[in-house]
Image (tube, rainbow, N blue to C red; front, side):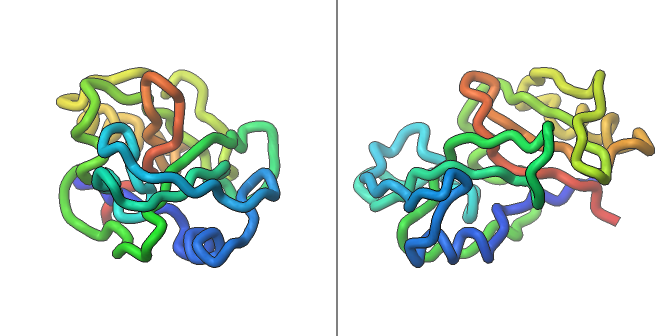
Length: 156
């Protein structure tokens, strides 16, 4: 089953870059990428060493509810093209494993779908989870730090 990987909501990204508040109501922190471990959630690529970046709290859910996890993310400070490419985005090639969790259409974790998988099993596991009628999408998170990386849906 082919998958679509989704960049973070562009409206939110634009608002943050313009100085708007993050999920905690604070402006993003500004820093410089060290070139390792700074994946942009818009272009879904690593932020190159020496490039300006933003660090902020994000919640990839539309509304507050018990399953709406909030955590840190990075963004390129300069505008970047949101990921729209085929295949696995570059940010999912930098770790040996990732945490995947299926969510229902009302944004609740579908229990039993969360597991850590090797990068070589990422798409196969997501395909299996997305075949479950209860699952609308799969969130991919860091297996080490639990940070949100991207959202996966089945392509039609």
